[in-house]
Image 1: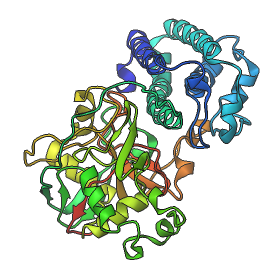
Image 2: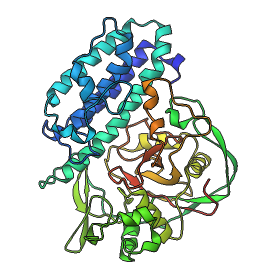
Image 3: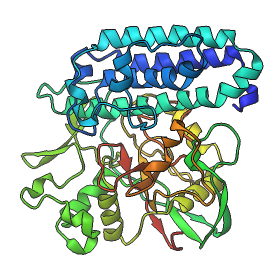
Image 4: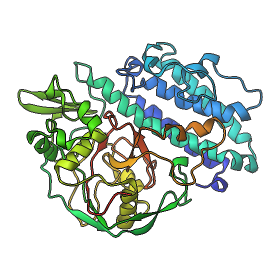
Length: 430
């Protein structure tokens, strides 16, 4: 929606949808599950639940609630993520030692802020709603980002438990990869970036023109079976395939660890940990949890390359339309893991529904980009260094959150995100 389309009723309806979805994701987890931090990149489930609540308290209630006082003074310190302008924050790598508040108390905090947000919105006139709509809608999408992070993080937490607990879902039946096809895309001077219809993050703006040579995109993602062939051909042992930093980061002491994240070899059989348990690697499913370095090495081995983000966006728009990514995510049931590509139909498959797709593009500002004023301007712009762009969406992305213009980003060595590979060929990256 645009700011002028929001009403008190539509805001509160959407607010309740987003907030209840978060609680639904946390529901299968015990209080103990919600407290664990298994590595510095992972945040405990209860921290995610509290942080997104802190966001509404900080950026909505603090400036607009009459007689505002924080629910708890220390919560502003504990649950601030990276907003320097708001004040100091607890070290990210130590969030797992915050045993209190517990998961139950975080739920009370969420309920308190929810009640206050509802009261505030009910009292606003339409002019005030129009002024606050952008911040409130940003809060919705911010919480949806953390819904995906919650699932990514608990996946890692449960992977380290020797009981191999299951979060939810059931595995797909074993399948074999189908034949990889290609979709031809015309080049030229094309428009990239958000076109002003509906919500976008600031890093998707402004729309601008990019020149592309004609190219083609693989019609589906690279599969586990194809990745096994890459491994069997010495893919992790051949320095000529790798970018220098990626090669330096491989495990030379224990080469058996050089495989996608969550893969483990037992008696010559590869197993993969998923949110629905640990199972033999399914050859027909998309390979996931690979870094940009791994994706680039595989593309080099295959005699192809990764698409630039401009090629990815233009190709998806040309082949499937502006709403392709959103529709793909909404049509997918909650499988919690990438699924087979489905029958080839001459068009791009698996766009946004299975894995975030690495591109060859560094995460940089678009021409004319300006971060928002104040603390909210720290949302994206300050991370535009040493990161690579991923496009699409994944099996953990919340419904109606993805967009064709969405720019996700991670360091090139990151693997705990649900990331995969789509190949490109021909042309030249922008």
